[in-house]
Length: 145
Image (tube, helix red, strand yellow):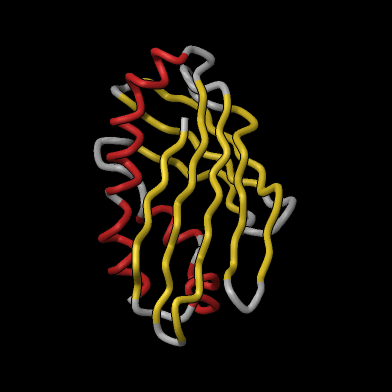
């Protein structure tokens, strides 16, 4: 399934790209989820992100690899792909796009593809994942405006 959420912030896309760091990552944590960020190498190809999530008292591991990144006159982007995912997720690919709107505005696009391996389960967890990423909108604005 696919989730796509766009957020407009008042900051140049190159500056936004520099602010995609450990502090922002921790701030983006959804409510009611405990997070221990074990590794955050950055947002460039080959970088790793490893964390332990606490959901309903259960600890679960999540490891991602940045498989691609780039910068042009129109956008900055990076792609994280799940290597070790908490159940029921089997596949995860998150394309982070920072689109240049003008010198002082950036459109942040969270474009996520995920799968549990079962279409019905994908449909069931879709609203939960959607809300977790929609929750990022005010945090992006707070950190990046």
